[in-house]
Length: 60
Image (cartoon, rainbow, N blue to C red; front, side):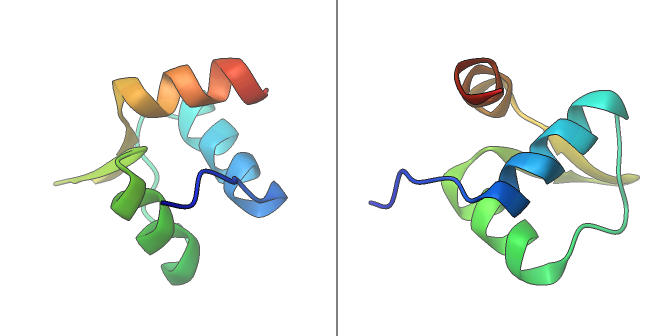
């Protein structure tokens, strides 16, 4: 399992942390973050999961 987070992924985690929901996450980055369980898809877009907040706290 790949645990490395790229700079682009980190940027989008920070964007999702600043805004509660984001609709326009790039497809490849969104798929990668979804597969790792760092974000989840909701009705209004993407939202950060608890695991994503923990990862962001450790990285950011």
